[in-house]
Image (cartoon, rainbow, N blue to C red; front, side):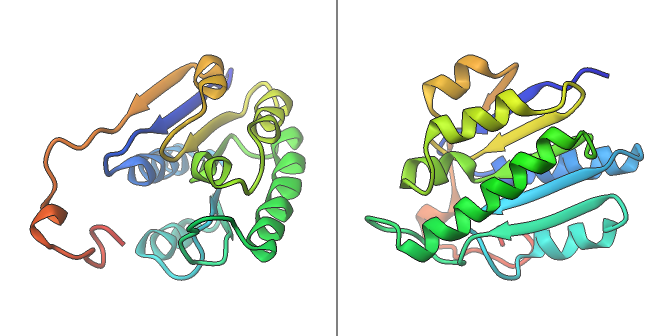
Length: 171
C-alpha cells in the first residue's frame, strides 16, 4: 500500500483529535503507528487512551509541556531536535505503517526546527508509510507537497464564553 502525506492545519479545534482517530482506526486494522508530539509534554487524556493500544501504537513526546512565547529556550530546541533525529530513523525504517507528527507545524513556527528539517522527513519516509503532520499555520512548502490537506476552522467555540478546557474533551 502506498503511503500519503496528510496535513491537518488551521486555527480551529480538532487537529490532534483527527490524528488520534486515524491512529485508532489504523490500530484497529492491525497497522503499526508511531505517534509523537512536539511542544506538548506530560499527561493528556489522549496519551492515556493511546497507551491502551501499546502493542500497535507507540507514543512519544518531544516537548517540555509548556507554551512557547517569544523565543524558545535552548532546552525546548534540544528536545525537538532529539525528536527529529529519532523520527528520521523511524520514518526511513518502514517499521511503522502510520507516523503522526503532532504539532510539528507549530514547532516550525516557533523556531524549534526549520521547515527544511520537516521536509527532509517527508522526503525520507518509506514509500508505504502514511505520514500525518498536524498544527496551525502549516508552511506553504509543506502544503504544496501534501496529498491531503484538512483545514480546521473555528465557526463557533464555547471558549469565547469562558469555558475552560475539560478533561476528556479538550485535554
